[in-house]
Length: 58
Image (cartoon, rainbow, N blue to C red; front, side, top):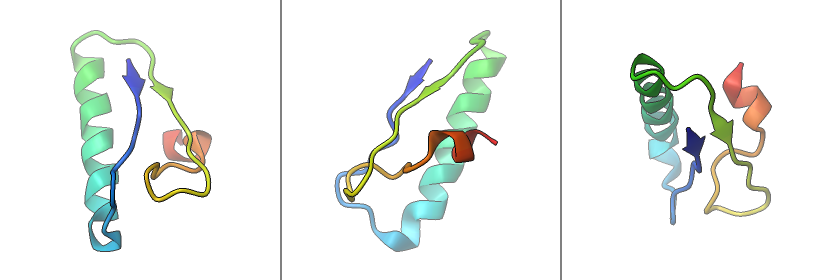
Protein backbone atom coordinates (compact mmCIF):
# COMPACT_ATOMS: atom_id res chain seq x y z
CA UNK A 1 0.00 0.00 0.00
CA UNK A 2 1.32 3.44 -0.92
CA UNK A 3 0.40 6.36 1.32
CA UNK A 4 0.93 9.92 0.13
CA UNK A 5 0.03 11.95 3.18
CA UNK A 6 -0.89 15.31 1.79
CA UNK A 7 -3.30 18.10 2.50
CA UNK A 8 -3.55 21.02 0.05
CA UNK A 9 -3.88 23.70 2.74
CA UNK A 10 -3.50 22.02 6.12
CA UNK A 11 -5.01 23.85 9.01
CA UNK A 12 -2.70 23.26 11.94
CA UNK A 13 -5.69 22.64 14.22
CA UNK A 14 -6.61 19.56 12.15
CA UNK A 15 -3.17 17.99 11.69
CA UNK A 16 -3.57 15.60 14.63
CA UNK A 17 -6.80 14.30 13.13
CA UNK A 18 -5.16 13.88 9.73
CA UNK A 19 -2.36 11.76 11.21
CA UNK A 20 -4.87 9.71 13.21
CA UNK A 21 -6.98 9.01 10.10
CA UNK A 22 -3.88 8.06 8.10
CA UNK A 23 -2.83 5.54 10.77
CA UNK A 24 -6.37 4.12 10.87
CA UNK A 25 -6.27 3.62 7.09
CA UNK A 26 -2.95 1.80 7.37
CA UNK A 27 -4.30 -0.45 10.13
CA UNK A 28 -7.39 -1.22 8.04
CA UNK A 29 -5.19 -2.09 5.06
CA UNK A 30 -3.30 -4.53 7.30
CA UNK A 31 -6.61 -6.17 8.24
CA UNK A 32 -7.36 -6.52 4.51
CA UNK A 33 -4.10 -8.40 3.98
CA UNK A 34 -1.62 -5.72 2.95
CA UNK A 35 1.82 -6.55 4.30
CA UNK A 36 3.73 -3.33 3.72
CA UNK A 37 3.25 0.41 3.50
CA UNK A 38 5.30 2.93 1.58
CA UNK A 39 5.20 6.36 3.15
CA UNK A 40 6.19 9.41 1.13
CA UNK A 41 8.01 12.38 2.59
CA UNK A 42 7.64 16.05 1.78
CA UNK A 43 9.95 18.80 2.97
CA UNK A 44 9.54 22.58 3.19
CA UNK A 45 5.97 22.67 1.95
CA UNK A 46 2.54 22.84 3.55
CA UNK A 47 1.20 20.37 0.97
CA UNK A 48 3.04 17.39 2.42
CA UNK A 49 2.50 16.81 6.09
CA UNK A 50 5.06 14.05 6.76
CA UNK A 51 8.62 15.35 6.94
CA UNK A 52 9.90 12.02 8.28
CA UNK A 53 8.21 8.78 7.25
CA UNK A 54 10.45 6.76 9.56
CA UNK A 55 9.35 8.77 12.57
CA UNK A 56 5.68 8.38 11.61
CA UNK A 57 6.09 4.61 11.19
CA UNK A 58 7.49 4.09 14.70
